[in-house]
Image 1: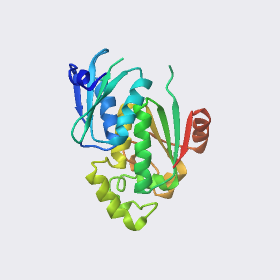
Image 2: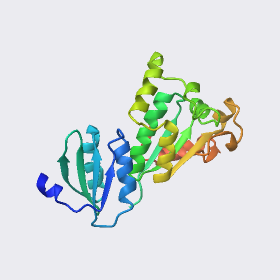
Image 3: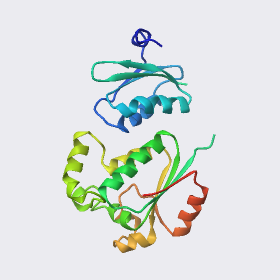
Image 4: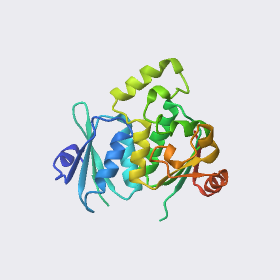
Length: 83
Length: 141
């Protein structure tokens, strides 16, 4: 998805994990995804570089769809669709 | 699909290695692994009720003179304590923490009640060997 398409997504759950370093964002994503339904969109806000690769890999492994990462100033937003 | 199994022989009682174990455990939990932790000699001391949450009572394994810097840095980065990592992993996935009977005795811990609530039971070495044989991932920290 393009940056514009990502930004236009309707998000069902937003997780602000900017206050934590690895493995904090991953732990928060794991807990949050259990609270939404199949097909729902979740965004994870993080400034942790390792997380940028961690969450897409984890999501694909667990059957969720990684939609893309939107860059913001000083952080990024990772978009997932729950499988 | 059956969960993958991790078997962790946790020997260390040092705050830096326990923190590393906590991070690895978090990864295993997020990946839905079943984890068996066998708390061996030095680690059993760290699991005692009066010691676990008191970093001043826990040594550093490496760069011992940088302990304060290490702990201050972790706090600044908002990293959980090793106990918090273990606790959260238990909430997320199936983690069992077994205290080695001998190790407990070395540190005057005869009963399960002498250890923090995260500990599930006190066991002998054959249970570790069996778990290690059956695990997909084996670690010694």
